[in-house]
Amino acid sequence: MTLSERLGSRADITAGVITTFRTLSRHPHPSHHEEAVGEDYMEFLRGLGLSPIRDEAGNVMADCPATPGREGEPLLILQGHMDMVCAVAPGSGFDPLTDPVTVLEQDGYLCTDRRSSLGADNNLGNAAALWVVSRGVSHGPLRLIFTVGEEMGLEGAKVVDSAWLAGAAYLLNTDGFHLGRAIVGSAGGRRECWTRTLDTCPTRSGEAWRISITGGTGGHSGDDIHLGRINPIQVMAAYLKDRPTLAVADFTGGSAFNAIPATAEAVVVGRKPDLGALEEALLPYQSTDPNLKLDLSPVDRPETVWTENFCREVLDLLTALHHGVYTMDPQFPGVVGASVNLGVAQRESDCFAVRLFLRAAREEDERAMAADNRALAEGAGFSLTVTGYPGWPGDKNNPLAQVLDRVYRAQTGWGLEINMVHVGLEPSVFRAKAPGLVMASTGPDIMDAHSVDERAPLAGLPDYALLLAGLLEETLS
Image (cartoon, rainbow, N blue to C red; front, side, top):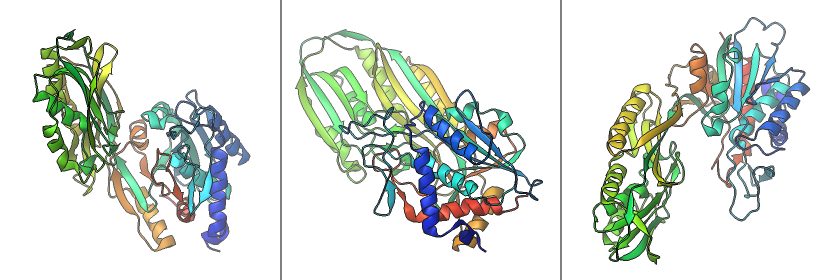
């Protein structure tokens, strides 16, 4: 009897994975609020006859004894994260701290009622893994690890006890997003926040105006950084830098470290600005950012504006900082190797803050980008606070990916794409805790993650479950 026959029909497999996903979605679980969903995981694992444990951070671990006769095989870890980015539709009334997501099956997709994101990242991959284990598939020594705080900088993975990884030969992360792809490397992340105390002076005579750029496409600073989309922060700063007669009272752009800015605005004092040069600056972005809009409107004159020296140094910094691709990966054609996202520039209390996200798989690239930023920002009088996580350099000959490829070919007739990604994944943190651990990441297809349009095609769920089951049945060496 084949593996697919033992697990049931494709409809049976889909139904089983969805039922498990619904179990893991019963409670709200945004980052930093995983207590209830962690108990759901513990309950499910206890229902399998296991003895799960939970650390102080909320991470969950359980060992699954090997199928009789396979005790001597290498230990494999299946791992994913429990938290989600809970995007909320404006005006929906959805409260991410009290309302569980509404899970629907519509038009061939697993989705929500569009009041919130779905949380398929990463509960759907975890659900497939848990359902497969619950079906009694033969396997060698197996450990399950589920973490918290992944969406907030891999926080749970950072505090996982090294003992949880000890003795393991392989780790498969289920946060891969794309069926048919095995990820063998990911970018590290460095969040830089540069701040400088505001330096202002009384406003003299003149009219006050708000200049705004809106409608930028924005996007994910890892997935979309290579697409050449506009950074309104830098476009606005360049416009103001060339017009020193306009006194700047305020400047705001972007929303997050890891989001490409979609908007920027400035409040200035002086003669009515001519936006002709700014309109020309937007023309190169008509294809990447078709919804760009400029606006100029009068506002009440502020009491203070930036001093000339402060204005010059801030605008010089914003226009000089690198934004976009720094280098492509030398081993994986078409994959970004290192990049910088100038994500936020805004007043914060009595300071002006500039927030950047540096991504790099290789430490030498991160060091080079950080040194460039330091020279520019410190020269402009800014001070740094920084957090981050390491990169996971990719290896095309990853042994675990080779096994996954062999299993997938046998099941579907198609090979896996073996690649790396320009986003952060938890194996980058585990690499430092267990240097000899061979790791890869796979996952079911997830579309428009972190948005109210998040959805997962139902047709691919059986193939992902069968890939996991086939890996478990393989004899790993």
